[in-house]
Length: 114
Image 1 (tube, one colour):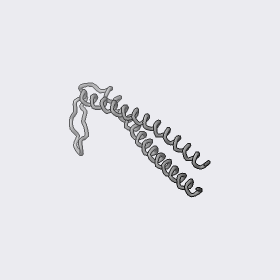
Image 2 (cartoon, helix red, strand yellow):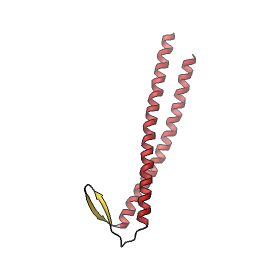
Image 3 (spheres, one colour):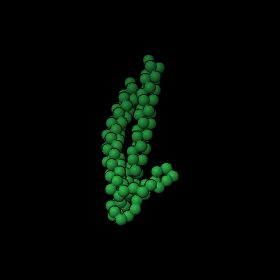
């Protein structure tokens, strides 16, 4: 009987460790999105200070290509919208994963007490 409990406890610990690993990966991905959001907000602020007399270039590979100001603003706005949506998705995902982690920890404690 003790061997069966030990096996079950080991399985619960492995599930918990996997959930923690997935949670860590998701947190890292969310941090990258936060960084991208900050960078794109800075670009938006810089573009908002310009007028149509300014020349804007976009880096495509090793080449700088002339770009229209309105097009650049639209691109940055779409990127900000996308990143914000992804951040909201990750927030919901992280809450769900934390809930699963708590549930798994409780299951492991219940098995350990048995």
